[in-house]
Image (tube, rainbow, N blue to C red; front, side, top):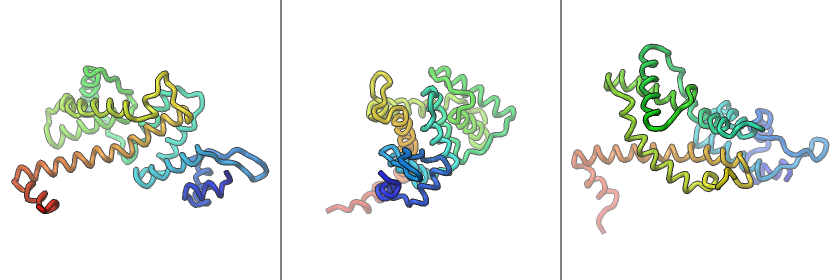
Length: 232
């Protein structure tokens, strides 16, 4: 399809598409002549992904650029690509942590906890860094002696959820490492969508449950639910 058709089908203005190409968020089309190129389904998928990352995920163009770079990488081991995508998604808005004794102690505790649970986190990985940062803050603001073991209930809940996702996300369940027509790109796109969209769901449901527990403890839950669902 022509770039004008790409704009029409994706709903993305032509000027924005050209901007994405200049910023290397969108791969170039297949050259068909002077100043002419053909675009396909992969370009539509990429534009849809960028829209989700920008509008739903609220990610910066710089972060989207790192994700796009991983999606477009050639001859890079899949485990490195997955790590790059996960790190890019988790890095948004994160402030570099101060390297002091408290953080070093928290990092050692987190590493011991993860190892005891059969998880080995990359030292530079964003997910590990978030756990360490969180433990430092918990010890500073809530419980000075809190161990990383306090994360175990959350880990167990996520194990079950992750197992369900692996069984139900089409791009993650193909045998033999096959990832369908989109290849590695399809697998990475599935990870991006799953992280950006469903992490918001996890957070929203957790907040709703906390609110419901607070109201129920004070005898207000039944009263409020009856207001929302009045008896017929």
